[in-house]
Length: 452
Image 1 (spheres, rainbow, N blue to C red):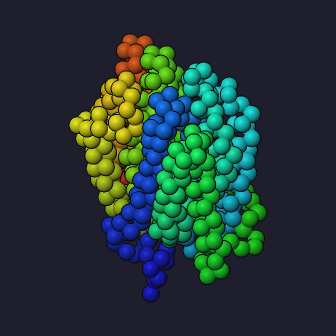
Image 2: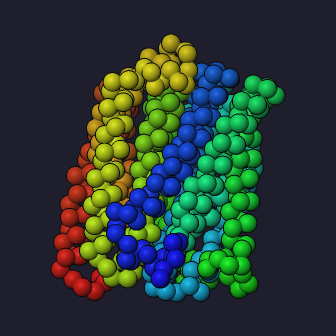
């Protein structure tokens, strides 16, 4: 009989039950991670000021770049691990774990060194002014010093989920969030460290969760664990991790480019407070995006295992269910943004001018938000079954083919409104294309009985 946490259950248990088992912990963890970022913005907005929110928003492109490199390893390793477990290649799965650890250490250190060297010029390029550069610099210097910890923490969390421990992954994230929320007010209000206090709270909370993960993988009774011989980088594994992780990597990298264009457009047409307004809108949007990402993380090991085991009807079943739930989640975001925008924005600030700008932006950005759930799940579907090229294509289509041109052209006609409206226009355009690609893939599943 398969044990409760046995990967074998991924190929035999009902897909609805599996999705509940895997997605709920991931959704809780990702929601908590989003609340983690929201809490930072709330404490900074009320404890430091409106311009500090703008300074924090300027760091989003760098944070996205860090996330891009983290997902290059973490997301790629998670899918590769699921595929190897589905193929019963447990030795290969353990080597994936070892390579994740080494790759995250190398990339994390290199990213930190490069960013610290060019930090000020980069922040000015992103839209910083003399009023906001100090806040952005102070925050990022501390975050970058803890970048290796962040990479390790996110990478091992992805491996935990794919190794059959979604609850432990959730606990690690929840612990980080709770500790961060405790330390933030202590450092900002108690110690009067300002925006630096929020950065220190982030790094320390992730370090504590990382220790928890390391202790789990150090246990000798685990199927996937630290052991001799798994740490040497193997070209076939590194190539496999990077090939699969290239899609979320490019998506996050393009996300950085998009945020840069948004910040620069808002700076030109609306000023520093418009950037702060986008920071608030971005945090609220990220809450729903992270919930859908958690849903995707729950689907990933199920779809990956069953694709590796050639159980294609199960792959389609779990994907269709995930699509319905993803659309429902993004629809909730749409309704809240349209009917309660002022209430949501006031959570972050009491500045009346900033509130007015953010409310207007929130309504526009969320006006076609239901399609976001569909597009995110469908794109992740291809990543989950080891088809990174299609996932990359769909991700880049939204970011580069649609959104970037809109951000360049529309502000010339409508100013700040043109910046805001570019986002929903790109969402719906990309979703239409994604629909056709997904339906074609499902048709192929129904026609064949062997991998293609």
